[in-house]
Image (cartoon, rainbow, N blue to C red; front, side, top):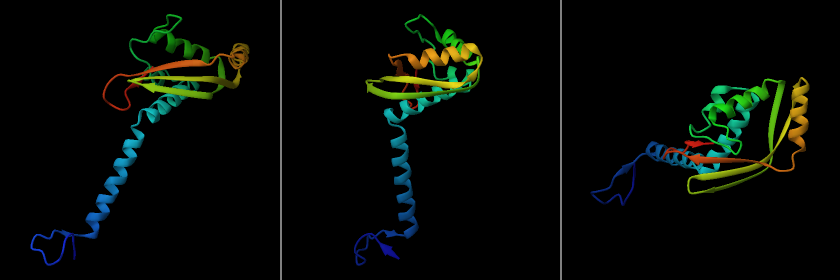
Length: 157
């Protein structure tokens, strides 16, 4: 049996190899959780989930990422934004949206993700127009994320 201190000591606490293994596994799991909970990682995951939701034309995926008080520069609220994403997406048989030249700035529970979006896919004439116009844009899209609670995954657009 292993002991933590000198084997001559009366207060020696026996340490079994399984205890050490369990402790090591716990430390590794805690480190992985803390890494995944970092704001940069959470924003990266949320941004990717938003693009996947748009690609899949999934109302529920997009709605859960947008804050209830959402309002953009075109004065779209949450419902308008989700409906617009889905209406445009409905013109596609196949839709892929890729973020290019992404830059992320995070400070005080706020995050700004700036990236150009490359759209590709197949669909009717409106889909082809969306692809052409979106891919010609010089100015990047700007996404403003806000942390809504203490929970690491509470970031909303």
